[in-house]
Image (cartoon, helix red, strand yellow):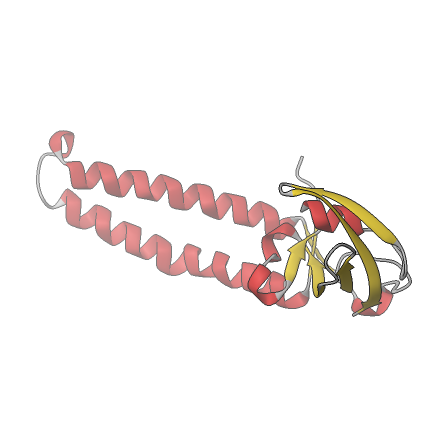
Amino acid sequence: MSKVAYYTKEGLDKLKNELNELKTKGRADIAKQIAEARDKGDLSENAEYDAAKDAQGHLEAKIAQLEEVVGNARVIDEGSIDTSKVSILSKVKIKNSKNGAAFTYMLVSEEEADLKAHKISVQSPIGRGLLGKKEGDKAKIETPGGEIEFEIIEIGL
């Protein structure tokens, strides 16, 4: 039983596009590789054929995994997000209590996380530590680099 994951509309569209690409172009490319390898003779000693069949297995496993993810995905309605506390899709401005550095992050699903785009997963240590907090709250979060205390400065969309 797979868990339901919540996505932005853009994040879910990206997953659907990737799945479609794998099902169409990916499968066609693998079929072409298998056909080319098959034309080279004896299949029992054909390393290219074995490699192509192996790649086909990996592709089909990835397609199955993406189909499951997309099937269990739910799009979050931004209008229903409570900005009085930190939740998925919240944009949270936090300040490191020790050095005063401030950061703004959006909490997203694990698959949408992208630190360069300031999107962190709700499953990450910082994401889990911020969930449910309100403006002005302090959150002590255990990170791989040790415990850090953050103050919640602002919550928005």
